Image (cartoon, rainbow, N blue to C red):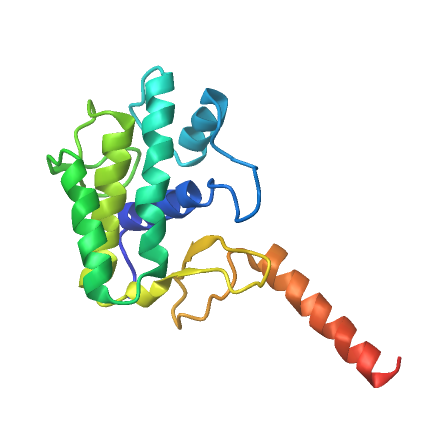
Length: 186
C-alpha cells in the first residue's frame, strides 16, 4: 500500500520529531534550541510558518513524548487510543489545497494554527490513516541493538529493519562479516 504524498510527508516529520528525543542513556537532545526547531521546520518543508518563539519550541518538544509510544504499541486498539487522544489535542479544519506543484490534497489544520497544533493534527491524521488501513506494523523501532530510533517502513514488502541502512544496517553487516572472517580463521 502506498500513502499519499502528504501522509508520507507527515509520517516522515513524525519519525524525525520522535528521533530528536535523547536516546536511552544519552543527554543529546536534537531539539533544544530555536535554531534546532528552525532547521527541523526547514528540513521538513513546512509552509506558512511565522516567527518561531520559545513557546513554539516548548510545545513542539512536548509532542515527542505523546507520539513516541505509538511506535511500540502492542495492538491496533492501543495505537488507536493513543492516536485519538493526540488528534483530539489539535484543532482540525480540513481543506483541499494544491500548493507547491502538488495535486489536490487535504490539509487537516488551519495555516494560522500554532506550529504544535499543525504537527499534532497532520501527524495524528497520518497515523490514523496507517492504522485504519491495517498497516500499523509499518511503525516500529530500529532493530540495531545500539539504536532505538523510530522508523516508518514504506517499502513494498515491509522489509525495512533499520532506521538508516547506511548507518545502522551497514554497521551490523560489517560486524557480521568481520565475525565470519574471524571464525573462519582469516
